[in-house]
Length: 414
Image (tube, rainbow, N blue to C red):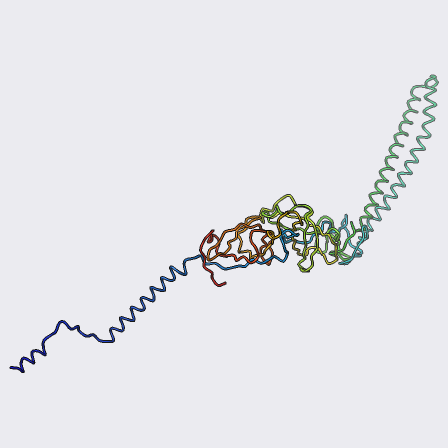
């Protein structure tokens, strides 16, 4: 009996004791929970931490090499080319064959110097013909003068006799007609001499036109014709017909023509000092001055053409050279403390330009401050700011329209 009771006691289920689980399944649940918590933590950091500001890059405002903005600072830079106000493609006034060309590229010529000669055989023949016509006209004039001299006394004598009724009216009328005819023939002969002399002048000019001369002193830049070729001032008539002998450029008339953006044309005025740098000699600063602002704009480029004069002449300055012009602000034009007028240079993308002014965003403690600045020249090194920020200021660069005054930002690696 006791044995049976002990056996039943062993088979009884005690509900107060928890059922045991396998150790491997418990570890799997713990690992899954830890992974879920890590994902949630990363998402929270990305949402509340990293994405809490506008992504920006940082640019540092540096002091401009030009020094302060008030001591002849550059207000604007513009590109253009060296051009000659006096340049001529020299040709003959007549069509003819070239006999001699006396110029070469680079040769200096004086005003009225002979550049080339054309075949003048026809012109010389016409000149001789005009001379012969003058001789003939003068001979006819002499004959008409003789006839008039003979008819004049006869007419006057018969006029007196008719007044005294010594001759008939018929005889008087005949003498009068002879006199009038002689006088008319003499007048015609005089006109013929004048025409012959005019013909001689034309023939002489045709002869002169076979000689091509320099219209002004300068340098030959192009030699276009060779002996044996035909030249025509009208148009090229074939493969061997030229329209000119060569091109002469007056080097004393060289100047620079630049296209200035119409938004900045208010910074340019006639007589304003400038600095010119040729692309061929970037370290050579040539002083100059504004000659004139051409009073029309180019609608396709939104620019206005400005003429700039060289104050120094040099043989290194050649036509069609590329040039960059810096328009300067004269010292003392604007009176302001030097500390408030220090010019700085910043990257062009760090400023939103609007004509002569612009907007930058200065970084302070994770936020940006919107600030208006006065703009100067823009060059390959960046945008010059004449006032509004100081050297060392940190500027935020972001996509257009992303920043506003007081916005929070986060700095991204460049």
